Image 1 (tube, rainbow, N blue to C red):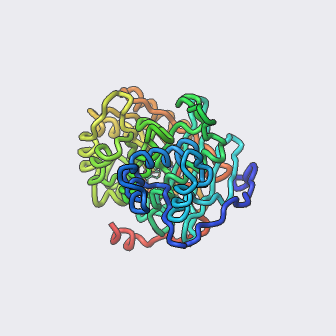
Image 2 (cartoon, rainbow, N blue to C red; image 1 turned 180 degrees about the horizontal axis):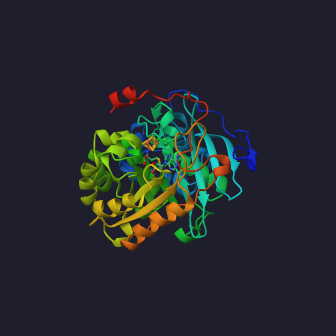
Image 3 (cartoon, rainbow, N blue to C red; image 1 turned 90 degrees about the vertical axis):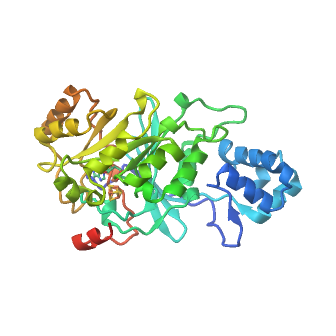
Amino acid sequence: MSASTPITQDVLTLPRKPAEDDGRANLIGLTRDGLREALVAAGTPEKQGKMRTDQVWQWLYQKGVRDFAAMTNLSKDYRALLAEHFTIEIPEVVSRQVSADGTRKYLVRIAGGHEVETVYIPEESRGTLCVSSQVGCTLTCSFCHTGTQRLVRNLTAAEIVGQVMLARDDLGEWPQPGRHPKDETRLLSNVVLMGMGEPLYNFENVRDAMKVVMDGEGISLSRRRITLSTSGIVPEIARTAEEIGCLLAVSFHATTDEVRDRLVPINRKWNIAALLDALREYPRLSNSERITFEYVMLDGVNDSDEDARRLVSLIRGIPAKINLIPFNEWPGAPYRRSPEARIRAFADIVHKAGYASPIRTPRGEDIMAACGQLKSASERTRRRRPAEAAASL
Ligand code: SAH
Ligand code: SF4
């Protein structure tokens, strides 16, 4: 099977019409406070605000209902009021590809005709959804496919929550009335903000979306089942702990500033020392809340024994696990994946120093769904010139 041939590809006919721009506001993605304000502004009596918010919230996020008419515990008049002022809109799935290993990649269309990708990765004991936060990325990490695409725009909170909802739709995972699945039986049990974009450059929308996803009366994923991956936007790291409270992963990838400057150019703004200082401050409640250091294995670039030893000495004192990611190639990529034996030798040094060092098995490679392969074909490909990339830092 060639790398570009998907195992199955079903182009879905869209069940919903795109939202008409008729001035009605989308309720998806509002926090509870935001939903309450919207309902009151539309004429809900102030003293009913909390009750109505609770009711609508449960329909949206516990039952997955997309039609006000189906909200049967609300009076006909109130349903009509809601339909007059609001919509319930999640992004459209344009196509879905299913890999030989069960990974599903959704091409998702958002307002403006832009596209992002969302990937579902089933594993034995959990199912992880890899969610995008931006169309493209302002950063230009030299090994990342998304980095060859300009930033087009930030996703809204609705578009971020919507990715979780459309995956639950596809997996048939909205609970039946009166039944709420426990975490361990869930098909979609974890969310990683590791799709397209730098989530900490879209902080408020990512935060609000995760508040919706974590809410116990709705999708109800624990904060410990959400991992945000950043390339190292140092000033936003403390806020991530305070305002979202999820787990953190950091795209580390190099052990000297000289190499990290080339791989992750944001390092020229916040270097390794500044990043490590911020990570040392990241609060955690238990050992299971270690920081994940992501480290892409690039042949002859960052994969020597010396690198492995430098890595463990740099992170000493930080409860951490090191996730080694064999480089996923994409057309025109300037790097090669480190040989397997090299990756194992690197992992061994890290492991002997006392850190878990799992080697990430690439998933969904046959459908270009693996880490760093995401990119919307609809957007213009453009490799930025280095001077331009540096100027944008
Ligand atoms: N912008 C965020 C999150 C998205 S990238 C970040 O950079 O952390 C998710 C992870 O995939 C990051 O660790 C990133 O460095 C890694 N990645 C990007 N391109 C890759 C590639 N071609 N092969 C393997 N990992 C890659
Ligand atoms: Fe952006 Fe992350 Fe890719 Fe870097 S690795 S270009 S920050 S998406």
